[in-house]
Amino acid sequence: MVRVTGPGAPGGDAADGAGHDDGALAELGYKPELKRTLGNFHTFAAGISYISILTGTFQLFYFGVSHGGPAYWWSWPMVFGGQLMVALCFCELAARYPVAGSVYNWAKKLGGPHVGWLGGWMMLTASMVSLAAVALAYQVTLPQISSWFQVIGDGTGKTDAAANAVLLGTVLITFTTLVNAFGVKLMARINSAGVAIELIAAVVLILLLAAHLTRGPSAVTETFGRGRGESLGYLGAFLTASLASAYVMYGFDTASSLGEESKDPARNAPRAILRALFASFLIGGLILLFALMAVPDLHDARLSVDGLQYVVLATLGPAVGQAVLWCVVIAITVCELAVHTAAIRLAFAMARDTNLPASARLAKVSPRFQTPVLPAVVIGLVGIAILLLNVDQPQIFSVITSIAIIMIYLAYLMVTLPMLVQRLRGAWPPPGRGTFSLGRFGLPVNVLAVLWGLAMSVNLAWPRAAVYNATGPQHWYLRWGAFLFIGVVGLGGFAYYWCVQRHRTGVLAAHAADGGADEAAPAP
Image (cartoon, rainbow, N blue to C red):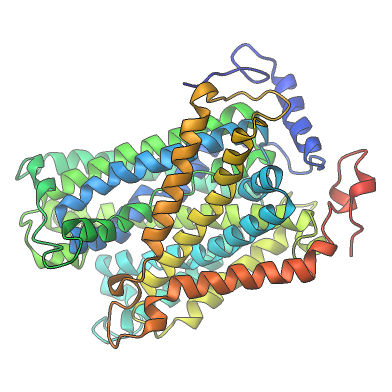
């Protein structure tokens, strides 16, 4: 299905590989500025920490079970199959263009500057919203470890959980801002150590749950009567519950977004993308399956309220259960770190093209820390502001998470759709030779990636009260919140680009490749 060729392939010359990577940057108009210090495990860790199985499953298991019953588990392989098509398309691009802000640069290369800007803008906005959304996961776990972490109220008030989530999330975003501002080496060390702990904890959790099984795998056929009386029956309930899986399995492109700081990324980034996705599918699927088979009472209402946290504590006991939950806290932390890191690289890439306000400052690489410091601070402040705006909103969890994920799926479409157009025109692959190719399978895989992206974007944004207006009173603008928010961000952002920013776009002279100065924009 795939072939490995070119510089960086087995038996290839490492220096040639570095030359190929810098040549790909030059083709996009950039000179290499960020130090290549990240190895194979670092790039893999970046991808898998963004997906962060322990974070996603522990944060959203309750949602899947409450809306689809245990049979929601089947959405896990469904989402994996769809995202695998997208990941395979990204692997081809990661091999040819290992560049910071990968989704933005790929959309620009395939669809032109307007598509590139819109894809980058959607991804950047989504990344900042995701930063806030992931930070909320602290509230789902820490108060179950100890009531000491419920700083605001006792958790029984209408807005206690939301307000406390904002406080804990602000602490987490402040931490990731400081780590990212001090350079990629510190970020990579913390991230890699956290991922190692997360992977070990996940495997141990699988083994512990397997040792406490109380029923067979037929548990995943139980629907608990969900969807009864609805127009679509269980299919409608299943599509709603599938959001719990769709919210988890994304972000694998982060491995390629660190391409300018990685060693031999043309070879390693595609492998890191696929390894991160496959590892997440296998580990996450087993955790969810064994949790449903091990929980003492499959019909316990706490399964739909406290989720996996309840399963772990009830099945493994308080001592072991709390140890696992502390590992979940570590997983949430490194996931937040990866989200923040990817957003910084995206902001840097767009600013380097004079496609953001104050581009010269945002694109400046600190000579001391070898990383863009200002984007780390700005993105952190925006993430905290998003939290503060929702401090008294009890629906903060599902609404923020949903909108962030939809925008990321749309940003992915800004890559896979122009890529499909290029294939249909016979213009793919572009000149040059990468280390990863889908060969004759490229077109069908690309078609499936586009169809999957369109279908899941509609499913995610569908105006369900269960997602966008879970508690009363009901308001139409909340139900249609995803369409309204994304419409304002997309149309408003593109209007700004069309009227203002497109007249300034161009690679900043300080970042332009040799020979590209005539196309570079002067530093404002």
